[in-house]
Every structure is written in structure tokens, then in C-alpha cells.
Length: 354
Length: 110
Image (cartoon, rainbow over all chains, first blue to last red):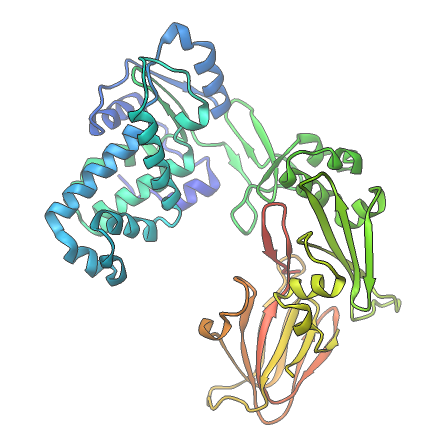
């Protein structure tokens, strides 16, 4: 089987192999020490997956979610064999500083270094395992996010297993092969004891240079069933905010309980326009610029500093810039200094700005 | 007092009036390139550009661009939309500007 580029799969979507997933899902269950599910269901998107699970819950009686056992059992088994076979010497050879840690942690740390974001995944396993262990009763409907193995996590787990198996040639990691094969065909997995839902990867995805979902002119992610999600610099926003940004009003932003969404909408609208349209802004001015602050609620404020470009335009005028800054800054000097990672005192020694 | 000069989203701090002893110098050095406009901050003069994260521990993550050693004669920083800046001989530390993002803090690269 050709090597999968996990990073590319995570970022582009749409390049998934199309094969019969049912046997792969069953193999993954077996590898994790679980009985294979009786039913494996394909849906067009993660949302459809959850809708189907909800609507068919009492008909299918899928049992408890097995997200944590699948991931945790596979990794735990491999890590334990790794320690038994290789001992701490191998860990030291991989990276001397991690050898000082307890060996299980150390091996996980190596995984972290290879699949950079897997740390939170491992933390998630631990949390999931605890909730699994304390679960009572045969079938409890748990929220989607606690049951689902999302695409990023599936890819990270597969990448880490593949790294151990192929790059480091740790034989025990071969037990993870079914998961690696499954991750090359499946985007999202919603595994339960007797039923497992899955959907393929997204049919399109647009990311910014920092790898966040971002598309200023259309959906940032779409799925086979037509589900489209709009996002701005990693924040999910309503479709109309991208399709028709003129509809964003200062009043709508001020009422937003979600600070990230409020900041994303201001970013789309531009801070300059928000300052012009919003009511009740505090204004502080000094020789370094103008600091604008808007208190949205008891706990949320927004701030931007207005600065004049040091160089004139062709017509002799100087352009204004609005830079969003932390709301706790007190003065324009502090705010401008912050944008360069300095204190006001440090920035005061500015000799020239063009 | 440290001399500070700024050209748009790039800031230069003069750390020492004495250039470093490196023999590897260039007559033109690209310092930063804009992601949106394609415009760039370029230094013209006999300079040596290097990065040493150990010398930038007091700078927030992602703002450190590098160090620039300006030899003997002064150097000029050029940009399509900004007036030139003059750097005197010495060692300069370069950092970029940032702003709040909807999710967190992000460096600016216009």
C-alpha cells in the first residue's frame, strides 16, 4: 500500500482512498480487543452521522461509545510492549532528555515530537478512559464530541502508529496497521459497541497560511452531502457573514456571547468600520496614536489602536492603520509598543518610523 | 538607550555600535516579505544577516526575524511603500509587528 501523506490528507481533504470500509472498521475493533460492530453505516458528513445516530438511537441500540477503548487500547498495548522489548535505552537513543521521564510518558513524548499535536490527543484518551471506566448501564446517549474520533485525531494516531511501525521499525506497532489503513479511507468515525458510523473526508477544504479553516469568498469546508461550513481565520461564522459581509452590523457583534465570533466578525467588517459604526466606544489619544476600546459585556472588551503610516501616499496623505490589541492595554503608546512585543518605556526610544 | 527604528511592520533595535566579526557579508539582504502584497523589506549595504534564538528570548514568540550586522558604512532599508531607513554600523535585532487575531495573536505580514 502506498504511503499516505497524513499532513496533506488533514489539510486538503478529498484525496481519500475509496474502498469497502466495513472490514477495516471490524479489524480496528478486533485490534483494540473489542467485538466487531454488527452494523457499519456510511453517511455524507459528520453532521449527518450525528443526526442519524440521534434519530436511530432506540432502533439500533448501538451500545456504549468505544472511542476511548479503540485509541487507548491500541496505544497502551503498543507502548507496553515497546517498554518490555526495548527498555529505556531505546527511549534514550531517541531523545536523551525524554529518558529522564517515566518510560511510558517518555514514549508518548516521542510520539508527540513526531506527530506534533498528538499531546492533546493522548490527554483526551486519558480523559475518555476515565469516563469509560466509570460508565454505568448498557447504553447512554453521550454528546457527539465525546464519542467521535474526528479526522485530525484519526490522522495523528495513524501517523504516530506508522512512524513507530515503519520509521522506527517497532514490531508491536504492527498491531496498529488496521487503524492506519482505516484512517486512509475514513474522515470521521463515531464508534459504538454494536454500531459504527463513519463519513469520508471533506470534499473540499480551504485553509490559511497558518493551517486554519479560512475562506473569505465561500465555504471553508464542504462534504459529500452538501454540508458547507464557513470560517474566518479558524472561527466558524454564519454563511451570510461571508456571502454578504455588508449585513454584519455593530449591534449584532455587540450582542455576541462568543468573543471569538465577535472578533472574527469585526475582522471581516474591518476594525475601522466597526469603530465608525459602533456606539459607546472609549477613545484615548496621545502622541503615538489613538486607542479605541469597546466594552461588549461585563467580561468582554475589544480594543484597537489607530496609527498613522510614517510614509506618505502618492497624494501626500498618510494612511491610517487599525491594529487590534489586547483590551487591557491602557494607552496608545502601550498598545503600539505591544504590537512589536515591547513595553511603552522601550518603545519611547523610537528614533524614526517610515 | 537603544536606538529603535521602524519601517511599517518591521522594527530594528540597535544592540551594539560594533559590527560582528563574521567575514560572510552580502550587499543586499531580504529581511521580510509580505504575504499579501509581495512587497519586501530589503537591506542594501555590506551586511551579515543571522538568526540566533538565544539572543531573542526576551521577544514574544514569532516576532523575532533575525539579527543584522551592518559593516563599516551604513546600510539602507528599502520597501515599495515606505520611505528608506538608514541603519548605522553595528548589530541590529529585527522584529515584526503583530496584532490580535479572532482566535489569538498573529504576526503581521503585509
